[in-house]
Length: 264
Image 1 (cartoon, rainbow, N blue to C red):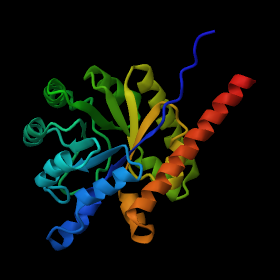
Image 2 (cartoon, rainbow, N blue to C red):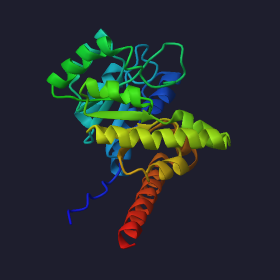
Image 3 (cartoon, rainbow, N blue to C red):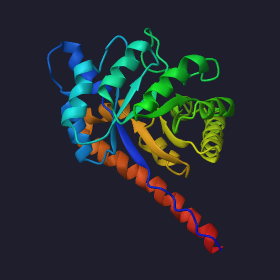
Image 4 (tube, rainbow, N blue to C red):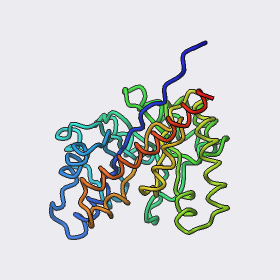
């Protein structure tokens, strides 16, 4: 009988964009997103995510430089696949970059990349970043054609957009929530079978993060806005600790079910 593959610990990436949003609302330097990154790293974060947008509405160029210089936690830099951002990334050389869609008028990222139609635009960016030793992931929906297109670009990881599922759960649309959940489960398994590491994020709260942690192929969750909002009430460190605990409960439930199947 062969060895059983262990279920990997699920990593927690914390997006600090909206700490910078608060800072930028009044100008000045406070609250400092770098201080927030240092705090969440001490409270259970495995990496820090920061999205450098074209309009610099929250994270700014000097934030990226300081995150790399001052925070002892890996940086996952989100960016659009533009010439400007590629140049910045190649100079900064963060450990990881997640390529995301971006529209100036949107409040937040509203969906995944269309990797199929944007293959020719994405390919040189992915290649340049990979050649620089940067781990590249693509923020995409859970649809199989998009995952296949990501595989053709030879990225080591994808991040599945969970926003539609989370919205359906919060709004009590049970049928839609189940449909979106099955798509995430199927997409994660499909990507894993293709040798792609699977991350997930957007719109997650304690309850949805706990549930999605039961999907064995997903090895990282990236969460930001909810935790910054919770910090108003419980503090940023406590919100991270509660999220880490929720994810650990989900993983423990997965491991327990796997053990029951083996025992039976």
